[in-house]
Image (cartoon, rainbow over all chains, first blue to last red; front, top):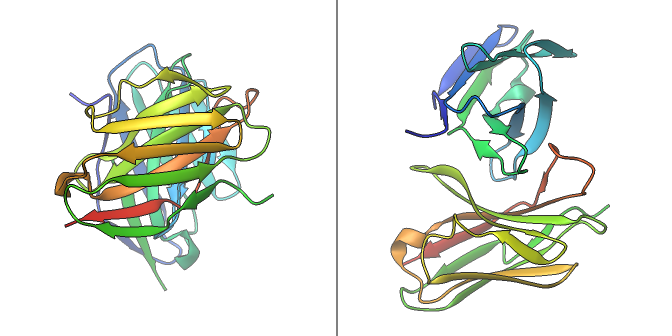
Length: 110
Length: 114
């Protein structure tokens, strides 16, 4: 079993829709939860991170963590064509090694 | 800031040949990571260094793969001999000691072994 499971999609939504992305993880020792965004033919870049259960907002993006269920989510409100990318969840414990999900490819149609 | 610089960006090589991928991390970053990304397996950590010392190479798939970091501004990932199943995008990434969650990726080296 992989440490982090993520539905690879792909996901296609109309502009302005809410995008919902999810990951589950298996090891309760993981403490830090991140979302990376990867544009086509580019390296991933950090979008958001959190280390506690609950919600964290950054503009149109909301990261949600439920440690009891080992479930993390990313919501994108008012999605834009420029949000079209692959989104990867990532988690880590105290050893600085990140475990990535498979990535979900999102296309926002204008 | 120039970011993490990788070379070559693209390489096509024949099975059995040696491949060397190069990375220049961001100046001042203490950690350097090598990742491999494929459709089947996603993004996998191969090895990481702290202050030029390899800390964890458990992700290196087999002895054909080796990585070095002779100084703080340069690292190489070598595959010898290469095989078609090594075809992937190889990312180098770096981060400073203080930023545990923010690692900065290069744009990747796209390797095709035929």
